[in-house]
Image 1: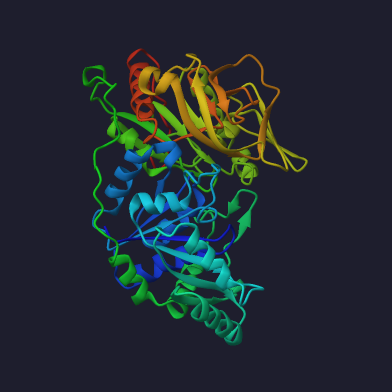
Image 2: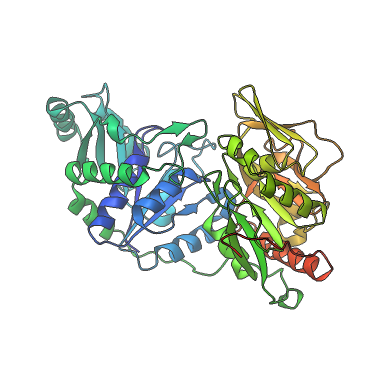
Length: 477
């Protein structure tokens, strides 16, 4: 499993752009590239997936644990000539003073060489003590080289190289100039998702051209190939608490909201639903006038506020979803999905009507209401509680939302918030009819019973008389 970690000294150093460029450049040379992203993230993986041609996988200590993380990596890296892991934050940054969960910790766990991307704007000789410090801080960490980013020109590059040559033995693997034309657009949650950006392929091609021209790809490929054999378990996440006799093999159809407004899905979550017996049926809340024939819905995160005009304009689909929920259709919704199921979204003085299936409204805020890892505890109110599948009924999750729930009446909650914010700092997971709608994003690798319990509840609801929605037309019929 040839592999490499792309990290940086601090955030906004350009490591995502460099990682995208390396993926696209190697893929353009005919190499089989598998991208990974450290930490909970949906947007960077979209760009890495588009650049590599393979679905990017997330690697997260907190959500998965080490054994499951190694399993995800091993499975994803199978057959790849280059496994490129993009770190998050700075190489040694962590919420823990001992560095637990940092990109450096991940690199050691994977026994992978590290390439540092350094933003050199306004820096010359000072790059030497910076890299000397990084080497000395953790001498056992294999920092294989550095890519100089935002270099001002040939003279600037020469000064940087001279300082590194005189004072360090750090190898310079490339020098990339400041090129504003290849910057990826951003919005309030970070980069613009690749699935929204109509010019994504052109942006990726431009980045790949610059990286191919300014970085020594042959040398990086050699470093990738120098990674030692990785001995790890390829066992699937533990689902031992699920008795095979409890779950039917009958297929159920679950609609997946999938368009520009709803793009936040971990591949493992969709795969877990399929493994549990679900046939996934994509539909567009923006464009499809009717639901396909389904027995349940999964509405993931995204940016419904950005597309709220178009979502409101789809009157027929909103009415169908509201009626189906009132009739008992099982629905699991995360963040953007919660926002869409509410009565309305208010943003920058504009109010748009949403599905109206939940007794609440959504108000966008200038600052994040919840940002980071969560620990939530089941209340027993969920229609498909996970029970003993996780320690003491607790689930590890994450959140990142610039919205808050207001005017909530009459609902119960699936979760008590132990860490994080959720709905109100104390609760998350609105339970209404057969809906669970929360700000928490769950990863099935760390919460392996989520998919099985949801699919089985959908199956039971169907068999007990909750009639599947019968769509009246559209591409998914």
